[in-house]
Image (cartoon, rainbow, N blue to C red):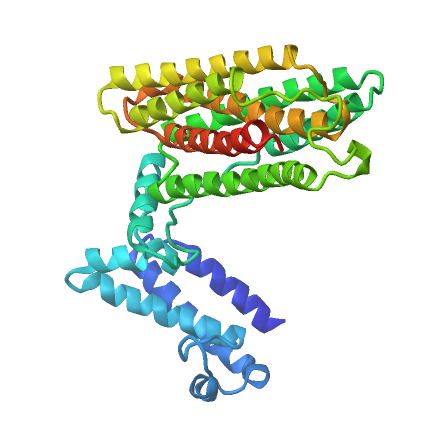
Length: 386
């Protein structure tokens, strides 16, 4: 109990300011006496401090193992601080001893978002393997509801389309509601991406990854069209008895390669050229004109395809030929619609920067894919009659 009271009194005296010289000397003597009593009273429980210091390992040899050792270290540090304060150059050393941890000695991180983005861009320019504690060239996206909304609306649209194909009541309304929800989600998601780009959150490495993602998306779409066109080739090259061993089946007046199909081919060929002009041109007026021309040609293609569907001598339910024809050309027309909207968004966004952005590069790349797929569709369905 006497040792604990002495420790408490020692703590109180250490917090008292030295108001006068005589009081300071008396308090220093009393602290030394109490400390010696504490050290002698706790020697049985703590052991020899000298032996502990020589046998300890880790961060230095002054690791405290008991309260007595801690108090002894505290008094030694206090005496060292008094000697340092009286020595020359104490102001500079005092600024160093104010650091309580090693983290306070590190350089201050930039607080502005622009400085953090500059650090991320500089790190992405010369680093391949980046430590988790260093600045990285990636933008950590905040929690967003758009991926969940896009997946749910797409699922609703596909389920409604499946029911609409089988003439299930109210499935048409579900399909259109899912389509409208998908469009609204895409607009909101793209809006957030544009805002992030305007704030400078997309580094050069991220822009490259965006283009790589578009390439992966194009590969997946190519696999879809490969399956659709392969079904046309399989049915056309080996017709079974269900279609009377003939392709096109008996009673089906197939649409030839001339007429509207030729016009649509010419429209897409012209749009391929205008999209290239929009990509390589430097004059903003030329870029805007080329983009407007490409969007207009895409709308002309969709109008021509609508007229072809409305005057076709067969429909979607007329056997395997009608199913493969409308599914393949219809999906291509849907991709033309998506590409036209993408180009329209790039055209509306271009005057804000007057330079080719990632949106424009992705839209032109996607439009080239649509044009190339049409070559396969035109050759297999219209020209080869498969």
